[in-house]
Length: 431
Image 1: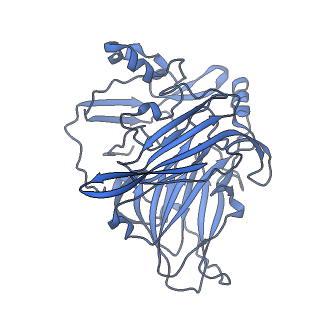
Image 2: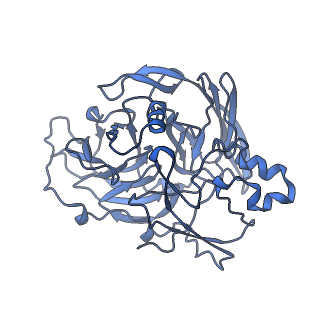
Image 3: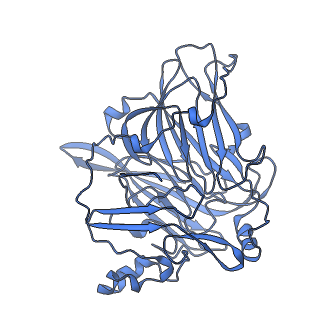
């Protein structure tokens, strides 16, 4: 359900129309087959999967209401949105809220005046997100100079899709050691449907396409390439950059890119956008991991698809945020007020289940969200000891420049990291 209310704002002497966009999700179960082979009880909104993408324009206020028809709590998180002065709308279960109880509802207020770009919404309470409760969130730009850089806007949402409800998998993990357990190989969904049935993207010669690529995965990575075309990367995770050329994208869970692709001038050939589903923590198995899919790029219905020689990954110029120049030309944040070092530690839980942590304790949810603790304990909120040890709490000062050094000595897993409510500058990376 979608509704709009128009607001008139005065900005710089100009009248700007902004909308209060109201979206309602009746969150519930539905039996569905999305990969063409398995049917199981997934979680959708308003009786459907995939959930339609949410589009708003920068400056709009999004009111996202979740009505919980599940038999467990749920929450919604707008991934990448800062939620300045409104952390209670961030949707992080056990951190900023207790979750929406069954039979209840809650409305998240998401202001977009300070952000535009490519994001997504997903449950942040339990396994509801990987069971289907996720979709793209696009905040359209008001900047005319940016809009002049492309002619059409295309969304490419990538998902991993399991073979059963993920609560079932978690229950097995509680009773069985991972040693000897067969790996779970999810399928791939592209724009909400079986990747083997990917719908074509139509190109018109000479037109410029902004391709928004979102990894709505919870486990695996995606590599995306379009041979015969060059990508100009203009956005990474909601941060705009000066255009930089790349041949491909490698996206971890939650990552997003926007690239501008200029279509070929000729109608002679169609092309294939290659999507590789891969992981470095699951052993390679032919046909399962890595897995290869293609999205047809159609210039002419009866044109042949152009083929290209296979090349190795090390020959590809992958997009790399370390070498992107921010469009706003933000200078290095300094001087540093607080330096924090955290090692990723490999731990073993009960029953031999491996885990990882930033401190001496692996994270476990606590009955009282730490946001509530911070707001109700007065000056004691400034002491890490007030928070449960498994939270590994760090106390920061408002407006301080914090340098966070993350080290990964124990884990062989390549993992992305993001910080709710913040964007950060990457100043160094390597072994």
